[in-house]
Length: 511
Image (cartoon, rainbow, N blue to C red; front, side, top):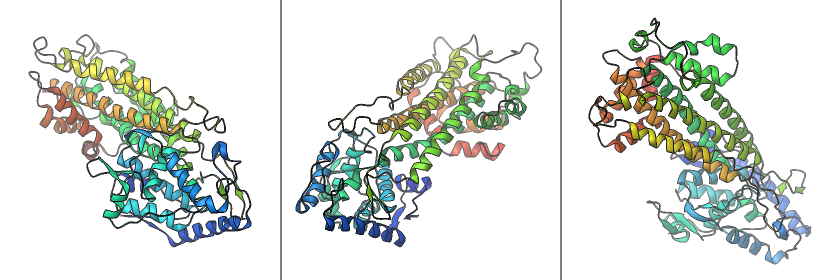
């Protein structure tokens, strides 16, 4: 696959194809022309000797410091070196690749005043799979992701570090030489254009949105399986009950759960039982209200990310009429708010799943299943400690759900006196979603064990697919086994596409 960078931007699918796949990147001729036109305006400013921020002045608190023409290229190189000041573990390769592609996208919009060769140099890094070493700490999300982007830009100069094949730190100059690439020299405005933007936080948000969409559907799957195993009722998920509260995410989640519970001998076994509970617990009955609200939150975050993909976030920006104007478009508040909001939603999807796991294991509430889903409880502990693990993860997600975007700290001599913390918001969102994957995997494992213990009653088609997917690694109910590998396998099944595909072949597409 090839991703072509147009002067109108790129799509979320393009970002995923480059960040996680092997797609190559090319610049459309119209993109090269747009950048050349923008650069000619900067060259004209240089020739006229006008003072313009970032072209003939210093940066941040040094914005009023005039820089002589003969030192302006030096200024741009010094900017990159000084701003590549991050610390900590390297960011994942997929995040850095997304960030670089989005920086190319930003330059391609033709408002940054850079020569096409600058964008081409970033494209060369992507196509040769050279990934800069970007430390996790350094960005405040205002003036964009300055430090992370500077670590990327430094590699273009033949300096700094890159990720080696096994994730080790390598010298950038050596990595460029190995693939036949040469460092570039920056001209006026170009260093600033390489680092002033929201590309890191946007890249992480786009990756998180993709992951959350899969996880929220799988949350409906694990909820339905748990409800089936606990002899819950399907009636709270009838479409007419959700039509009278028209939140679209809720309706979609309820429709999924209702469909997943059909054609089940387990459900048939208690449908007309007068002793059956009139109302199920909230963690069962209100599953679509929680997961559905998360879906609506995801739609909001998707809208914000789509707008940002169309945005010019550099500073200053070069306008077609020749003006170069300072702007605040690099401020990451829209992305920080969206990431924080989505983290809250994802944390709650995991929290309600853990409550269903606890109910499944509790002999007083699981409707005649054995304690901790062990046929020989006492000598054996079953899934007791799997629920401990889930509870610990829920607690961590609650801490991570505290918003980062309200925690502004002033910097740069009070010139940058309000920052977004959007990088931190997006980074912790990815951790919340990783944790949610583990939580749903525990629910999947517990629900499958519960359905196995309902034999000889046949579960729903979805239940059968889940049992078939997990039985090779989880086995049948019996004596305790080393549980960590089983939980890891359940996580892989939950995160991957195969289980959902198997279920959809039996019940039709899920929302």
